[in-house]
Amino acid sequence: MEKRKMIINGADVDAFDGSVLEIINPANGEIVSTIPDADVQDVNSAVQAALSGFSIWRRTPAKTRSNVLHKAADLMRKRIDEIAITITSEMGKPYKRAKSEVSGSAELYDYFAEEGIRLSGDIPQINHSNEQVLVFKEPVGVVGAITPSNYPIALLTWKLGAALACGCSVIAKPDEHSPSAALFLGKVFLEAGLPNGVFNIITGTGRKAGSILVAHPEVRKIAFTGSTEIGQEVAASASRTCKRVSLELGGQCPAIVMGDVIIDDMLSEFVEQTYNNSGQYCYRINRAYVHADVYNEFIEKLTKAVSKLKVGQGQDPETDLGPLVHQGIMDGVLCHIEDAIKKGARIRFGGSRLVKGDYQYGFFIEPTIIEDANHTMLLMQEETFGPVLGIQKIYSLREGIDLANDSRYGLAAYVFTRDGSLGLQASREIESGSVWVNHIHKAYEVAPFGGMKQSGYGREKSKYGLDEYLELKAVYLSLPNIE
Image (cartoon, rainbow, N blue to C red):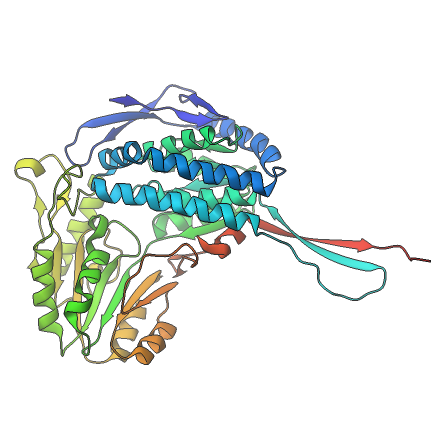
């Protein structure tokens, strides 16, 4: 069992009062590490360190900041196995996917390193004699980055990379169920040459350490990824000190499958986007609206494909789906399945917790397909943070779009049709921050990511993501006459 420490001002520290939390491997119930359970004294120390770090980092040349980000990316690649093993042991993600998360994050640090160099202000051409206006872009200040358990490196990278490229300092509060990857990242950046205090990491619960961080008057921005309910609390608390806030919240993402599709051409991507990470990510396909012309064929082929997915320990190279991260997530998923059955849906495949043999001490759920679903069911209205798909039959694209928009969420959506013009028109009408038409690519670093409605506000990644960490300042110059 590892005893982890927080990183404040470049030093490894315990909680001020010595309290700790235990980290459980969700695959077998074993304690893999302990972390400090931070309180107000620890958050205050981190804020003071971040303020000192900010005074240095904001004045550091953009090229120097870029070099540090590039070096950190290189170090991540060299330590990819160690970081990936940590992710697998704390949140159950299959090892091959954990490595992919680390390598993808390293690529994103390289991207932010280059975007930071390209930042620029503006000089409006007002054409007034003896006057000139300059528009500066300045780093917002100390950033609190609060991230969930499902992608412990990637979701922190989206915030940290942009903030550092802009000249901000950061205090990260990773989820208490899988914090160690973030702590590894802290060591990587120190080795890459980041000054002490620029990147600090506190550990503990969101209700205590996270809440204190959000409310702290010296923190200028909060970047939060998590549930809509907690995000609403974060926004309300941050508003009391007029903080900048970006929220990437829950998703209940629809896929519309029209009757003209060739199912074999899109099925593997559909399965990947539905069951990857055991369904524990915000822009997975949660609900599918399938045209009556292909409804039966689609379900038959989907069932055959899903039946081949292997549920198991993350260290097993053959594993496709690992465990859910903790008991609370598992209970919520089982609740959605039970609710759908009570309201008339049918389980086509899966539907149960795995409890025998190697599964008995972990939070394993079968990949599940539920047919004949409708909007009275939680499965089709609330985020199901697990490997469960609800399917409803439709008879037109208009019906599919209306059902897709019948949600308080608006993070991502998917449309499958061989008619490209209809796909484009559907993407314009669907209320979500991202729409994939026909093929499902990864969310590229050059494209902004974020939600509409109760899926949050603000954008991450891309050049637009950097704007979340910058303040605009107008400077008015009075110029002398030239005789």
